[in-house]
Image 1 (spheres, rainbow, N blue to C red):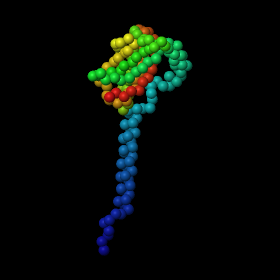
Image 2 (cartoon, rainbow, N blue to C red):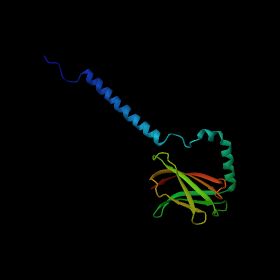
Image 3 (cartoon, helix red, strand yellow):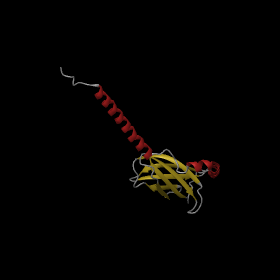
Image 4 (tube, rainbow, N blue to C red):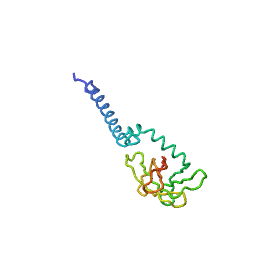
Length: 162
């Protein structure tokens, strides 16, 4: 009599071990990729910002007293650009501002890109996104009156870069 060469217990054991090794390996790969592309923190110094929350409330109250509103978006007029329009309470354009923006593209790591915006039409500030990757981007926009003046207005905007 010959012993059966079919499926034996040792074969089933190795198949189960191989299956779980494959699942654990795939999970480990995806966890590492997820943590490296988005570590879960919105700002680098979240603990300090939490302690300084009262100051943040004061800044927002001062911003509300200004009465400025901003409208921001991505436009494509041959080149992709971030456009921000500022108006005051009377819906008049706010001119003569120093406007800067920073952004990062989701899934592209947490590398922040800096953009100085230039005023074209009154109250409209623009920066071209020459080297931007397509995807969902989070913009942080700050504005002040001069090069050394404090920030008078800040806002965030999520937009899709085509």
